Length: 404
Length: 78
Image 1 (tube, each protein chain N blue to C red):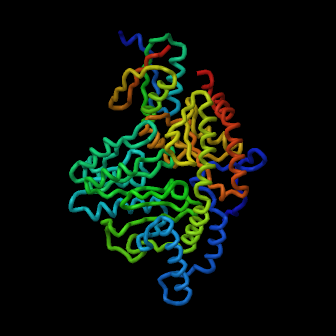
Image 2 (tube, rainbow over the protein chains, first blue to last red):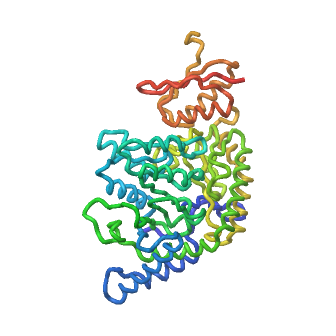
């Protein structure tokens, strides 16, 4: 067995690592404490009738109430699934199944999460009918084209639509109110994927099913939230179980859910102040990146998530750039080929028609998840902005592309 | 214009950013208005070649999908 030691990687400025991949950040301290305590107090199966089981049930109910209150819904409308992507696939599938007598066609923006697009393509491939998934084009900043969206909804057999509140790779917010209005005009339920924005941006209100992931508000990995309001026709295919109001087979891991609820409470109290600070830091990164030669900063500069920014550098290998920044102490993600789990470059960047290579994605962690808080986060961003030009130049020089 | 006037860059089988780097290297020393045809198989080249042209002021004249690859015809800007 491998011993768990300190995080690997080179120390950056001031000898600390600078975490700029907040999509998978450490959980906030209050949630960590609750998680550890819950391993002792909430280990039992909440379906059991003895005292320990009843206690786990009470804790789970409390956590559900806290999350439901934060999202402005009733507790029975909230189910915990094993991660946001799982919840997202289930959200779309449940509406498609409930409406199966009217059709099976799905409308989704071309920049949606693969948990929407991959199952949608599978449905289309199985039926040998490519029209069963309509991937609606986006503009150059990644915003869905509303005229195409509305036309797609009008196609007979369409039964479900899916749209992100904002894209987690490039930060661009989607026009949810207008998109939902178009859905309602056609009687088609809208699944809103808020995995990137919950805890960072206001909670969406324009949806028929809402999906989130506890990681976006500083909670642990492995907790997805599926909100199915009573008014929405949603039904799970298959034999079915009683877990989470019949919306999944998997019983929730109680300590993880408790930690997720605690993280929500901790992050909600930070609110607008946290968002404003993140916003300004992202502006700083956008401006530093745009000063690097042959570099394009993508996504909407204003109508965007507070904490996400993506840019691409011409003639640079994304993998080499991630390693170069890592060597200098900065942890960043990338949407370029060879840097993700697959060899495909980001479908989001491709759909926007922007440079897919040499890509760097910065997702600011919540200040509350860092030991040094807001000051540590700001110092890390300043250091990143100062180092970026050099790092890109170093990679170009190694590739021999600095004179092209 | 005959095909002899077009510089051809064969980047088939190579992954991005190599096709765009080869294109950049080929176009660098050409005169304004000269043509380069890039052959590539990596699907990422589709958005990357267009983005390269926008960044550097070149013109993407046409994109032709052949059975086994895609051909991008680029005219050098000034």
